[in-house]
Structure formats: structure tokens, C-alpha cells
Length: 512
Image 1 (cartoon, rainbow, N blue to C red):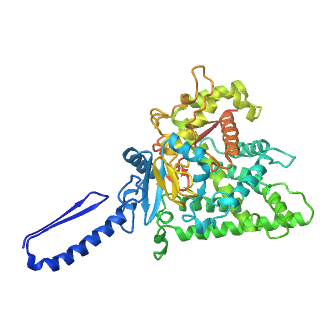
Image 2: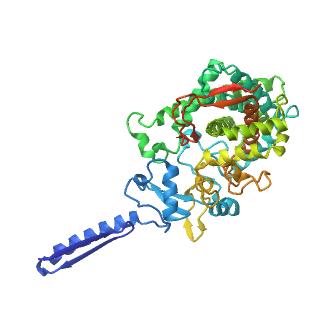
Image 3: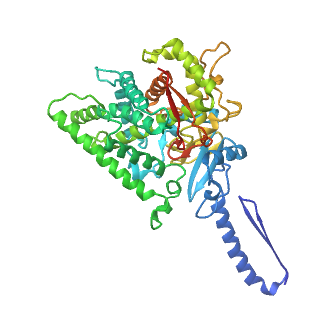
């Protein structure tokens, strides 16, 4: 008997070939051949990509998980180079399509927005219950998005505008930073995160907290831990079976516990506002306006209800607190290692605003260099590199590939913000990218830190206002330096839901 059994494994197909010379044993070997061929077919069926989209090998049970470990920004960059602007990865049995490059992302989110504006309903279901604005979809999402956007535009409710609240908080920020001993290095991030959170507090509940309030500090610590636990690098949120492992190796159960604590706090805020409305007070914040909308519809309302409001509050805090504070902190880090750029910004501030007048949003139009620096910080830090996963709302034929309804779609913003063709030498900090030959501010189409389409950051306009006003307030009043013998700054950051700067300390000198 001579048997030649050759297996050719290519990563997409198994080819099983046999040569049999012993007729007496043909029946037995034929049975084995049939069984082996069936097993090979099933394995091939598992490994094969039905949607015919290129991507890394798909293994049984774990899918592509072994090939996407590590810093996802770097992993996705290498896969983009290898497989092109559209590739597919598998997490267990779930397929995830990744879109890369400006043209591809624009085509999906702008030209085909209705086909790609769904939300993946699996990864964060136990945290968001598919409510709010960020995680909902369909009519609920459309209605909530419309309401929240309109409320943010009308913020101030006839009394004060958004700029007033940001400028007021900037004064408290200045006081907090001024109280720091100039001879002692400080953790600036811990102050900035309280400042940006207070701006959201003003929007959501109509009041701010004192920076030294112990309850506020506890709330900030909870929020920070929560954000670190629910990020794209936590394997539980991409491989759901891991949450059933005994213990809490990946912090998933801790994240659920913190989520419950935060929801309990937000429900207390809602009850307090409801009592005020019942006592005849006019709404002065988002919670009040939302409750008034609920009251208009005394019958059962499928779009406006308490649990939905709780998630809207959480969405706004998660989207508007951490991202802005992270960006401002990274900005200070870059100015520390580029003192010439810091000096140039301060020269522009002194020329346009002076040392005593508070900055306004109108000043942006006369401060091209400062705007260029802010835009370059947003580009290079890439705070939300993979955004929040989208999902297809129906079967889609996109660029020659069929993507099934309900498929999770990741928008790789990092592939645009660090695209060598759009931004040569993308790892280098170059504000000049956003200036024309005459020194005027020149926005770049590929600078999309807030993403694109209707699923772009809901609070984009507010975030831009915060970044400019708080950044200019800081540079108008203070100069920042790295303490002697300080370890080299790490600009990669910590990847959670967003990219957070790693802890560092800084010397703060008054310019007044």
C-alpha cells in the first residue's frame, strides 16, 4: 500500500489529495477519504471569507484575534498596507469590516450614509442598553440626535450662550493653575479633566462643581477608570465569551459596576430636576428641557423616557469630558518639547488679545497660527483612532464587495490622520501643515478627528469652542516647562475608549 496524503494550506483553502494503490483496502480508505474531505471542507468553509473581502486568517473559535493583538493603531496600519483600504477581521464568528483612507471613508459615511449609519448592537449592549445617542439607531437615534443637537444649539435657553459658560469655567481653571507652586511640578491633567467636565455639567445640569469637592473628585476618578476599562484594547468588548471566565481578569465586571453607580447618580439628578419642574421652575439645562419634552407627551412615549435620558447624559459626559481634556494635555506636552512653538503662540496672543482681555471665539479669525497648532494637535494625537463602531443597515455592495446587513464596520480615522500622502512625515509635529504660503489658516479636508457624516461627534462645535478658549486662556496666562531630569514624554498614550496621555508633571510659570 502506497499512500501519499498532501495537505496544501494557503490560509483560504485546504486542498486534500490522495493516491491509492491497494484496491483491497480501497473501501476503508475511501471512507477515511470521505471523512477527511468532509472535515477539510468544513474547515475550509470556516476559514473562507464569504464576503470575499481580503483580511487576515480566520481560525476556528477565535477568528482573527491572534493577529490583531497589541496597539490597534499599529496593527490596523500594517493590515491597511497589506490588504488595502477595505479588509475584514473576525472576532470569534463575528465579521468586522474595517474602512481606511479618506476617499473610502467619505464614500461610506457621506455618499452612502444611510447604509452605514447603524450601530453595532453587541459590544456595549450591557453598558448602554442600545439607548442614548451614540449607541442607538433607527428612529430612536434620529429623534434623539435631532433633539440633542437642537438643545445644544439653543444652549443658554435665552439667558447665556455656550461661549459664556466656557469662558466662565476658564476663569476657574486659571485660578486653579495659579494656585500651583511654581517651584513644584504638577499634574496638569487632573485639573484640566475637572474643567472640561464642569463645562458638560453646565450643559447637562446647570451647575458646576468646586475642583476640591471630594464628591466631584470621586466622580472624576470613577469616570476615568470606567473609560480605561471599556476601551478598544479590552478583549472582552471584542470577544464576548471572555466575560464568562470566572473572576474579573479584564475588568469587565468592574466596568458594569461603575456604569451602575454612574446611572444611579444621573437618576438622582433627573429626580431633582423633576421636582423643580413640578414646583414651576423653568428649565435651564438639558435635563430640564428633556423632562419638559417628556411632559408634553403624557401618553407613553417611545423616544423620551428616563432610561433614555440617563444614557444621553452618559454619552455627553463620555464624549465631551475625556476627549477635550486629553487633547489639551497632549497640546501642552507638545509645547513643552517645542518651546519655540509655545513662544510663537504667546506672541500671537499678546498681539491680538493682550494680557488682560479674555479671549473670545471671534479671536480665532485673527489667530491663524494658534488655530494651526490646535488642528495639528488633534491630528497627531488622534484621540479616537477607531471611533465608535458603525453597522450596515442593509446588505451593501460597496466598492465591489458585498457587506451583509448588520455587519460591524470600523472607521479607521488613524488611517486618514496619519496618512503619509495627506500629511507627509505624519509622526512629526508640524503646525505649518494648516497654514498657506501667506500664513493664513488653511483647514485640511483630511483632518477629521471628529469623524464624518451624521454619526460624527455630536458635540463637535462645543468641543472646538472649548479647545480654543481654554487653550488660549492657558497660554495667555502661563508658560509650561518640563522639570529637570523628567523621563522622556510618551506620546503614544494609553488606549481606552479614547487615547489618554500617560502621567507626567510640568512646571507652570505665570506670565502675568
